[in-house]
Amino acid sequence: MAPNPAPQEEPQDSPEAYVGLDAADAERRARERGWTTVRPLPPGAIITMEYRSGRLNFEVRHGRVARAWKG
Image (cartoon, rainbow, N blue to C red; front, side, top):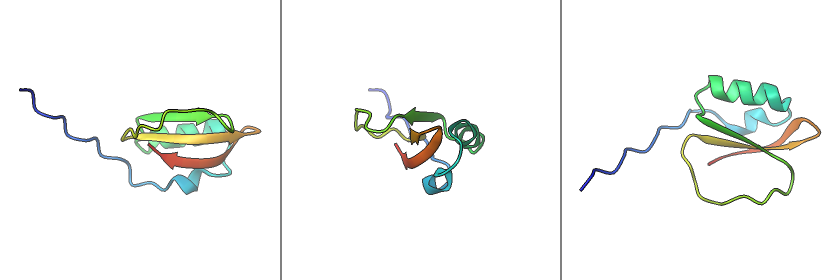
C-alpha cells in the first residue's frame, strides 16, 4: 500500500491582511508569501467546501478583496 502524502504546510499568513487590497495585488502578494493556490471569487459564488491546504480564497467586490479565508 502506498504511504499517505504528508499534508502541505500553509504559509504563516493571516487572510485578514488581504482584505481591502486590490485583487490583483493581493493575489501576487499571496503567491509571493507561499500560497500555492489563490482563488478569487465573486460575491455569492457557489463553491465546494472541501478544504485544500495551501489554498487562499478571496471574495472580490468591485476589484477589491472583501473577504479572505484559507482552504
